[in-house]
Figure 1: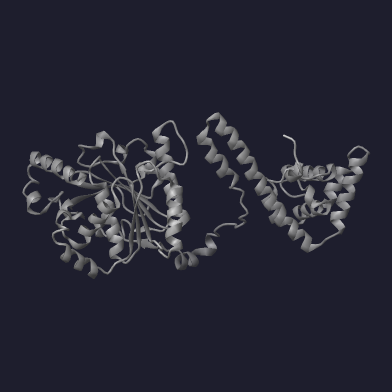
Figure 2: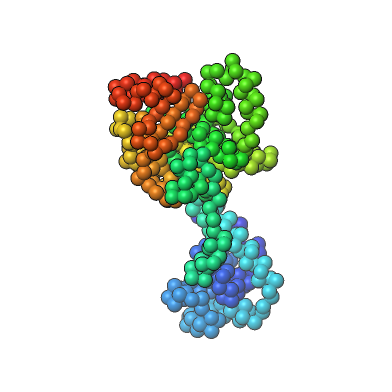
Length: 449
């Protein structure tokens, strides 16, 4: 591909190119930023190109930027001619003429130019990939072009930073509302900013109910929640929050409207927004754009709930579903870190987990790597909540489940005689396995309504 003026430093002039080379030799920080992205073809004279190639060659050989004397020694070995003479003149020029203001300008503009060229190359390559139908590679191509880093932080000086770690580093948590999960030895207060938690259950097993309870726990602690739903309507999810907050069964909300309204009015909690999208329509960018609108309108969330990740659409196209699901959960993880907010989502277990008393992490539907991405991974079945993974504390712990779907209520307990209960009805069934299975089918029907 032929290079035009816009693909080079032509419009900046020879003195600008002198300053770029000068900055590379005297400013190690700039040299580290520009080394991988500055191509010799950006320079417009053979002299400048040759000097940059020599700088790169000597650095690769000695792992340090060369001095003027070293460069002059190398160039002096060139055959006699115009190139040798021009290159030596450029070196003499940049060694003797130092204009700090011009050098700073050249550093800023050359870095900006290199970034733009990288993006331009990525876009042109994406057009070719689009024509070839390689959609999954387009996203990566663009993202790689944005990874040109100007960060020069040396990192965390471990031994000199003990006191600062104790004073500064603390997890800003949002409680789940489940005392057993919020305990110090488990989540140590809840899920924290930049962390991703997931819960798993079989089809119709109550994933959405559990996420509503997580949202309620945050609201009750005075936190603001944004709840995205891809399966149920905003009204349906809102009714479940109504029941969870007021204790009024969902089917009785209309007949007990005054009572429910009074209880909602007395609820001293955070704010809640519920946003629905059809299944397999919303990508992570859809969520980002919507959150941007919320933030611009003054709503500042403390917790994001995604109901649920499996029903999102990946930004990339994949032939196999497992790769798409892995990509979605990786995007959710990245969003939690980017927004510095905790995110709770859910996923579906495979068929093998449907009849298990305790569903383990290996029963993840379609893509096991979903569990590898998250910080916390819990599962719940007919009777047990199981912590399969927990970066914050205890894992491989089982709790019993108490559930009242009519009131969108779920609780966890350590009582060995516990189980999924709906008041007196379930207490009478727990000793009879056949009755328990019959009840669970009834419960599944209620969940689906």
